Image 1: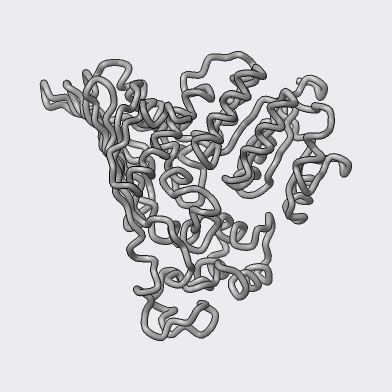
Image 2: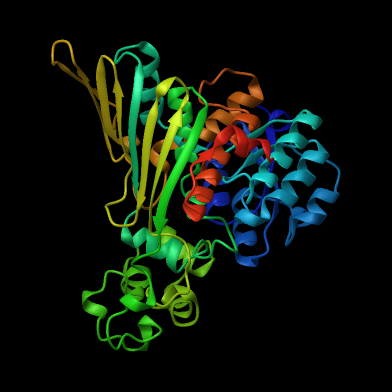
Length: 425
């Protein structure tokens, strides 16, 4: 493909998710070209500029001057923090950009619907990063269900064991520890799990109920004599899985932890030391003033009598698990183990599907191949190629509202009727 015929992209927000997507477009540089970036942190902005060969005149510390310019690309990638999605998304839509929009689409149900309506009125597409849809694992589950091999689906048990270390990094010390500044954990972390459940059963969700609390990562559970910061001579450092020096400085291979704790694309050990001695990433995990849950369950009732349960917990090893019950059989699988097992009731036989090692998910990212998958899906959308994983912004918003409704149920103790709830927005 010639330089002039490549699909041009602009990036708004060059943090870990923005870098994730643009790294993958760089790997497909025969088709994509990143031509502009807006990012407030200079080191991140410079990193993206040099990596993609962007002209100085198209590098900005805020998104407003970028989107004030005439439209220069086919797609705007929006990867800012949750509460900073709606403004650049609406401005980019008004300019006529298609969007690759990091989830959650908006920080509230109202924001999600505003983006949906704007896109529909302007005639642009918004591809929300529900990356689980684009994994080999979940696409294989969808194919098995569609084939009728397990009959009519009636129940699903789905879980995301977040893992205590991931929880401590992202939701205790990290960017998403305060739902007043970002979004509730059930929305930020697992709106794409609500999406995947709705996608697998291909039915509307009718009602949800939810329970969840912050129980463990609280000051009352701090060990005796634990200081405010790990680096203040904590006497419990050797036996603590959350000791910041061990997590961020000693583990040189965990790029995600090192880059997010410093907000730098290429952090040095000196940057890490500065972070754990001055920021929340060095604070005792029991003294972080975090307010999001550390475990939560959701019950979902779909059309046609389909019931699903979802569990999100810090107190388990990371990696999604799912069990899908049908009238003729059961599907079981884990995203960290690319073997799907199908059990048949009639003859008690089992069939195993080996997806391959690319499906393995882990704490360092990749989402089981979903991050690559959604960039490939973006190409499909731009080329008009059918891709059964892709959903439009209206479907995405409907599935976001399941997560928001679950949070309302958790807070109020009520069962939420989705039709009534959705009618408010």
